[in-house]
Length: 266
Image (cartoon, rainbow, N blue to C red; front, side):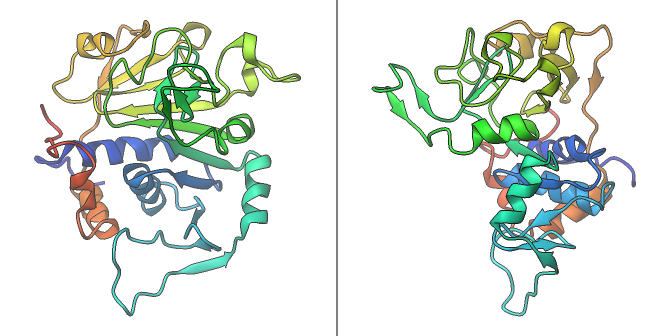
């Protein structure tokens, strides 16, 4: 890799940090839900994990990830093989998939919510997507979380208003499952990188983005985060990574993903 870039946006920092979630996956189907997670998975495939499988979100596995946004009329995507819905489900159920998703709520157990907020399930204050594929996905393959705005509305105290995915909560484990079957990997936010490798699967701080403090993280999380003695700073993007990101996102759509497109160094 080339030397660290002197200037980069927070979105670019998060893309590079998110790519690390896929570093050791080998040949699995990588699914990034949303622009930054998609670019993160594509960057991982283009650099340190070429064995990743990426789809065109329709019917093919690609040997090169598609760039985002409008493409030239003469663009031809690099199809590797057919991959219809049936083959996607085969990957999901065989644990050969890793998705990076963006929950509306995450609780201390790693349980996530994309369904409803407030009130009861029958009469919520806010109706969102519904649970969609979250329950089956979360018990069948690895998931990482992407949080563009780290705050207590996302990282809630207690449980999520509606538990839409499995987490490290013994009281809610499906029959026949143990905590060892739960596979929640990384949490990439605009403040830091975390994982669930603290004591008893407590959410653990892994690295702080440049200019962010431990206090910033704890004050914006609705439950205790495990703080190790040594905390790294999230690695800055390299010039090579930024060049690849530009190829993957030639219209700079990443600049619209975070409010005011803040710099990577606070």
